[in-house]
Structures are given as structure tokens and as C-alpha cells.
Length: 396
Image (cartoon, rainbow, N blue to C red; front, side, top):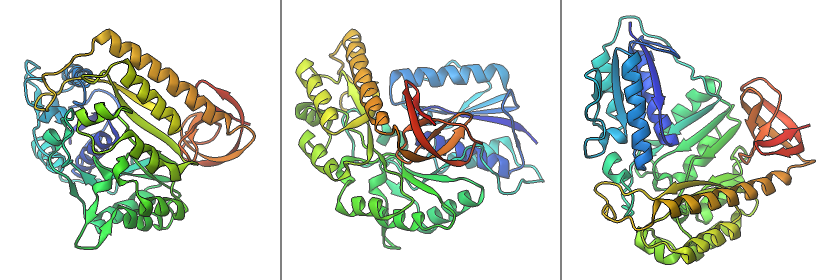
């Protein structure tokens, strides 16, 4: 038997990759530790230069405390030498997410005694329904490292949701690289039908979508989200820019006006987003357009990414905005996000919500607003908003 640790960097899909690796090693009879072990798996991110640097640092640290290190995920599939010159006990696994768990497990080696159904530490389970992307935005390396869009069979997804509920997870998050592209044509499923049937799994108490492109927010999906009782009133919908010229340069397939129009039926949802600052050609006027769209769309939390040229993309050779300007715009955007989040949280004062406690003293409400609460990790507790702090809503 080998002991192992698994760490992931990046998005929720990277977390699902790590979860699949963990499950496979546990199923082969190995033991997971929270400290130094025989084997370390580092599932990497490559969305920015900073993400690649952090991934490399994580692999280098693991090499000092583990016998073998496997570098997996998006960063491992990036062209170039990002993980060159690492110690000899580091192996870079260049493979699809579907292939990676078996490749790592085969190298580690199975043992005779396998463990039964493993329960993850989290109270929230991420279930991958789709991977890859066939819409190559000019700045995005993800299609190059994860491949074209592909979907899991609906019966496999629903079986995993049932499994996670049996394991004790109160909330399931359906996730994918381009979630709205989900299709099981043979069984007649698109994303709305999958949401309806996942939401009907007995015992599931909360269902969320991880992230969805604005082009897939249509009448059918909105109706499904509203009509499925366990669906959380939260959506994460990347904007990237609120300026139409920059959106065209990015290769995005919508305008700022389309973004606002499609969000209009979701006025009661908590909406969060991604924005790139400092994309080539972004001037002050374009940046102000982004701030205006975020404000009109009632976006609260914004994940800010300074533009970073990615190898193999259409804009790989372009980086016209200075680091100082990116830093300044990023700070303004984060401040606008902070103010918008506080305004959303103040609406909870004196009102009741149901909070899923996912760590000691903290949890998230139905719309993914953060709460400071007492309760056992894994419990759903009914609370009333008493005070707003910089970290969230304090429960009475």
C-alpha cells in the first residue's frame, strides 16, 4: 500500500480532476494522508502565467517531501517547458482528464485490499458532466489543453449524483468547462433536462451549476432553474469584458447588450462573474464600460484575471497594457466587487436563510452568499441576518 496526497490548483473542474484521482487511488487500496506521503499528485492550472508559476512551485515543494510526484491537469498539457528542471522524482502526465487517473494508478500500482465507497471530506460534491471546449476564444488555452467539448452519459451523471447523496453530501454542483454545451443526444438530454432529473434525486437538498456562458442562458434553462426546487439562486456567468470592441477582439460570441438582456429574467439571483483586465487594446474607456455593465447586471463577486498571453492562442504575441495599469484596474474592479457584495449581503439583514455549514463557523446560503454561523460542518441551519461584516453575514 502507498500513502498519497492530492492537491489541486485552479477552478472547480480542477477540483473534479483531483477528486477522480483521489477516488481511483483509494479504490486501489492506497491511503490518503494530509501530510507528507509516498506519492503526491498536483493537479495544475495554466489559465495565467501566475497560475503556471504556482503550479510549478507546488510540484517543487511536493518533490522535497514525497517519494514520487505526479503533475497532472491543464498545466501538464501546456506546450513548453513549464515543468522542466524539476527533480527526477517528478513525472508530468500529459493526458486527458479521463485518462489521467488510470495512468497515475497504474504507475503507483494497485494492492490486493481495496477500500469500499469512499466519502470525501467536503459537504459539497462537484460532479463533472462535460469537459473541453470547441469555441476557441482568442485568449484561451483551455481547448488546447483539455480538447474539444464532450459530455458524459446522463445515466452516469445521475448515478454519480445519487452516489454523492448516499455519501452524505448535502449539495451537488454540476460542473464542466463549457457546461451549457452538455448533450447526451442518444438519451435525449440537454442541460435543462439533466438539471431537472438531478434535482429530483431523493435526498439531494441543494443543486448548483458551477459556471455557464451567457449564450446558454435561454428561456428553457431559466424556467428549469426556477421550477426545480433544490436549485440554488446563484449563477456564475463570465463577462470577461463589457466593451464590445474588446469582446470582438477576444473572440467572444456576444455583446454587452446581449449579456444584459439574457440576465434580465434572473433579477433575484445572486450573479457572479469573471473579468479579464488589461486585454490587448483595452483603454480606460473600455474598462469603464466593463464597470458599467457589471453594475447594470447587478454582479456581486468578480473573479479578476490580469490578461496573460497563453502559448498557442491567437493573442499569444500581444500584451499591450502595462503591468501597472493591469494592477490598478484590477484593484478598482475588486473594490467595485466588494461594494456590490456588501450591498447584496445587507439585503439579508432581518431575513431568514438556510445555510450549508461547510467549515467551522462559516457556510453559504441558498444564493451562495457567505454567512458566519454556528453549527456542525455538513449541517443545513436556518438563520437570520444580524450584521454584515467584511467576511459575510453574521447570523443572529
